Length: 271
Image 1 (tube, helix red, strand yellow):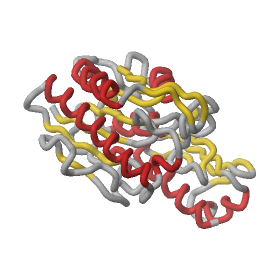
Image 2 (image 1 turned 45 degrees about the horizontal axis):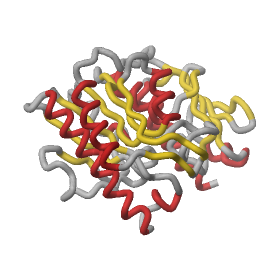
Image 3 (image 1 turned 90 degrees about the horizontal axis):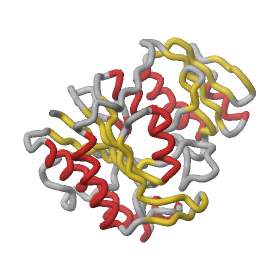
C-alpha cells in the first residue's frame, strides 16, 4: 500500500492565531513541532495497519518548509518546498492508494472556523467546481480521486471535519479543536490529539469510503477579494469574467483546475 499524508498547520491542535502559522515567529516555531508530531502520529497509524506500507508525508503549509525532518517518524519520506506539481497533494500521482489530510482547516467564507481560507486568505473569497463551493479539503480529495486515491482521514477543527463529512460521506475524521472564533478554539492537548490521530489512521485504512469522483472535465470559478485583481487574471488565455470579481474557466481536468486556483491566488496578489 502507498499512502500520502498531506499536513497543513491551521488545523493542528493548539494552533489558533496568525502568529502561530507565520514563518519566522516564535509561535510558528512551536507550531512546527506540533505539526510534525501530528504527522508522525498519522504515519504510526498507517504502519500499524500495514507494516509494509510506503508512506510519504507532504509538508503542505505556506512554502512547505515547516515540518522538522529530524523530528518526523523516520519510516516516512518527506516532500517539502514549493513550487511543485500538485501542491498540497504532491506525490498523489505516484500510484498512491490512500490520502490522509492532517491539520486541515475550513474553506474560505466560513464564520465558525479557525483561520479559514482556500489557498490564499489575501486573494480568494470562494472556489467553485461545477457550482459546488470547495476548500482545500475538497480540492485535495478531488485531485486524489482523479488519480485513484481515496481520502480516508481528515483531521482539524470542527469546521474542517464537518466540511469533510459533507463532501466525503463515510470518511473518518478527528476533531482536535472546536472553533470559538476565527482566532480562538477549545483544543485538545497535543498528546491527546496525536493519540486520536494515530488510532484513526489505522482504522481509516480499512474503510472503503473517501472517494470524491468528478467528471473528466470540470468548470472552475474563483471569486477574488478585489475587483482590480481581475485585470491580470483575464490575461490568462481562455479565462472568462463571470462577474465583477469572478474568474471562470471551463472544461478543465481537476488537477489542472487545482493548479489554476493556485496560479490565480499568486497573480491576484500582484494586483
